[in-house]
Length: 107
Image 1 (cartoon, helix red, strand yellow):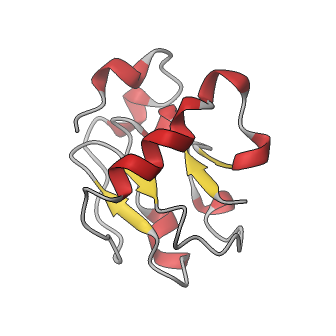
Image 2 (image 1 turned 135 degrees about the horizontal axis):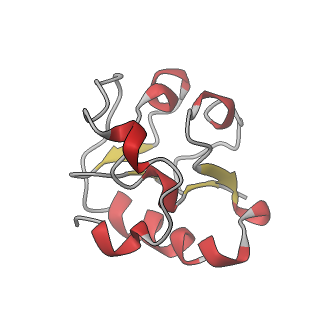
């Protein structure tokens, strides 16, 4: 089992989770983070750190977020590893819990 970053991270992109990851499995894109499923050790440390509750265990994904398992795996191969916390986007709070954000994902 791995952990998966889901839709609510899009355009929020808080990086609090990155600081606690012991294996550097987070990768950063323009407006989203992903977890590399091959690197994730299922430690759960990132889950409580996410201020927008966008990280789930793969087995606990809400049904409407299941496509993010494949999205995380795909984009982790393309995007660079992120190991340090960065400032969130200035409008991150405005994007928290906005439905239908997948169309805004920048690859």
